[in-house]
Image (tube, rainbow, N blue to C red; front, top):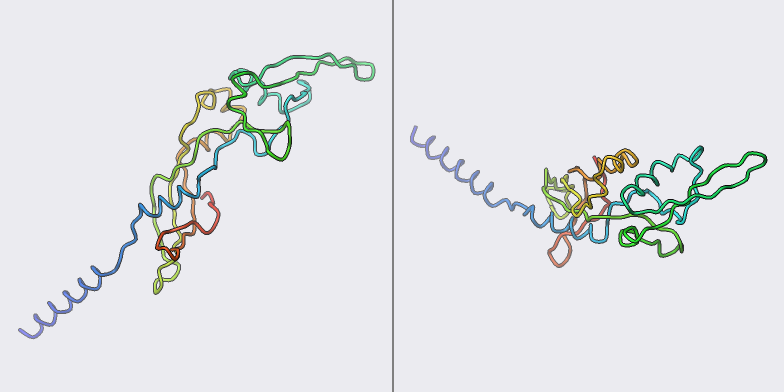
Length: 198
């Protein structure tokens, strides 16, 4: 009986030793690596850059709602111009940047006259789970994490902007994503694969 107790204590001790020696990865290092990969990444209202000034036919162009929301937010100025089309005259709205809009406009380097209204910066807030891709050699992990966009200007949160750009509501809330991180030769972690929303 005494031998069984001693054997049980030895096994418990060995299990505790093996479990205690298993190195846990610091999630703060993962958050830091993910945030480094976010540097220079911002949210933008349009998926692709647009050209300004823009001429929009209010009766036919679906972009009118977006341009009017940005005008209401003070980022664009709206003018109009009468155009004769065949026998019927029509009015075209012309949208261009306001003084306030210039400070929020991100010009497209490769396309003069094109740009987007971009804002905020991405920030990882928590690691939901981290799984080593190879448990025998844990130098690469698949990491599920939560992130948010910081520095959101007031014009983004207006009801008009949220209606005109439905993607903004999701983009400005806390979201989840997955990334693959690898340990570098210097011992630090870096993001390998692009971020993907869940």
